[in-house]
Amino acid sequence: MIPKIKYGKGFKGALKYVVEKNGAVIIGDFPGVNKMCQLVHMAQAKNRKITKPVFFMSLSLHPTEHLTELQWRDVGETMMKRLGYTRNLYAMAMHTDEPHPHIHIVGCRIRSDTLKVVPNFQENLRASMIAADLEADYGLMKTAFRGYRSKKGVSLGELALARRGKISEQAIVQNLIEVALSGQANFATFLSRCERYGVGVRGNIGGDHVSGISFELGSKTFKGSAIGYPWKHIAKETAFNPTEDLERLRNAVQSFGLLPKDLPLETQKELVSAWRQKHLSGARFVFSISQLLGHSEDSETEEEGALEDKEKQKATKRQKQGGRQ
Image (cartoon, rainbow, N blue to C red; front, side, top):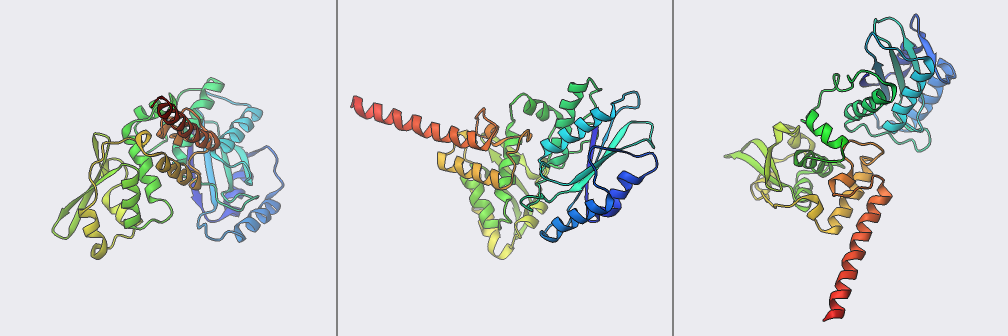
């Protein structure tokens, strides 16, 4: 089952393509084109910051495979739920214009209850992982990752590790950089966060020109261009100003020798908070904050509880040591 996701601006045209194409079979509840467009436009009108509020997905099987309409409904609803579209308007339809069975899903990325957008961080990757689970549930061919192309340098080997609850140092540093860039951080804030998270930063500087950037975590160094964070991207995201920021880059700490689980508890709490704000710790996210910090829990509440338990354990240990003295 191969998932493909795109985003767009116009909802009505996409919706009519999905539900009105010749041979289309609408799956699940559908209030009609005009009613759904009205509801979606109401949600969009209350959150105009989102430039591409329309979600469009296809799920395709091998030509020799088949799912019933009821099974397709379960597949589509499971996919949308696990991607975080639990309070969003969307429609599904099965198309018959290709040799391979497939469905299309079109929806609004803006939640109907909070009017906030559902985060789409690594959404194609997450969809591929969910599809892999659905393949196992329905006995389908293992094709989920054939349509996936990583922009962040995540290898299939790392995906396999993630599914077993493990995470590589490369994947850790990618997630830490993503959090450090969150909230439209300027370059000074980005460097400050990297320092707090134990990520060393080294610029490839010649004179007054920066030609590249690399990051260090633990004992390993990663070229930014090799892990999906080249200098051009970092400079653009942080609005790098050579006049003010070049010296900051020269003086950045290049090595810490730490992993996230070794960071101070307050810093770990900061990571949990930043992760929540970006909604990166949702169910089945490929690299949860729990994995990042070496915990086994998956929910945000449990993550915070793990940190609090860790603090209590340390306090108890200090008290015992004080009593023995």
